[in-house]
Length: 406
Image (cartoon, rainbow, N blue to C red; front, side, top):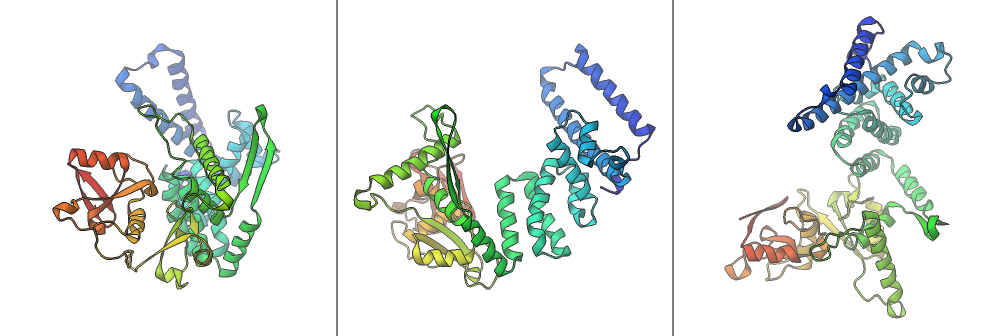
């Protein structure tokens, strides 16, 4: 946190902060803080910007205190304790996070991260997530790639989800780590598998299930459809996401137990994996994404393809699905696999039904001369398939997706 973020202790800073605190105290204790109804949203936005600005200034002060040795001078056991002692509203965990981010941003190797914090793109909690991801990548990359990886992870941390950041981190490791390290990591993940049971409050039983990426991919594939919201007529599904996942897993187990003599009463769960052909051959490094956004190594895909109900969808160099069959009236199984990969579920705006529960719809009807090829097919759930036909809707289909319009 050098340069623009450096804070020099003195009357200009402390005086400005004292004035700001005075204004805030006056605003809170008097009725003059009230704003018209239309201005409440703007007031919240301004307060949010103020909080972010205060955090950036706090990080600068912490970095400056670290450089000056303020904690040691004051006799504190650590910089975290010194920060927490002077910031009684902060939990020790939050003080530690501020110290971690501030000291990391002072290091030249974290230049891109420091700039993202300085500009306000990353708050401290998101910057800490990036540092955690970088700690996993750092053993496998040189200084130049380490900074390049920051440019990849920072936008994901700023606008993406924790899962997206985790997947990107795994991919960076898979691309950079030697084969022996990748194999060792996979072996360690496999070895850590466990199903733990303990009594919970109120007579319930708590299970904790640890799975390697391969196992997690199969569980996600098994419960993704059953775990989706299931409205009761016009009434919404009131179950929480955790309850839906629990019910889905229970349904899978009950169906397996109920199968006569161990014979499944329905088709086995399928894991659809997409990877470029050169990656399958081992010519380039990286991971293979599944339809449920899990990530598997090419070695794992090659092994599973021999012994499991796994459908590999090998893509050409331009990412186009290969060998998907000839044009017929109904979509072929290969074409359905390609639609699953492209559309990722029902294409009707706002619908979240997964692809395995969708139908292949001809945008231009077969009776009207519409071909059965990918440029004329779109996935629709049963409900929206009916809606599209009733309303006479049509769509524009491209290689990357479907856009519906009247």
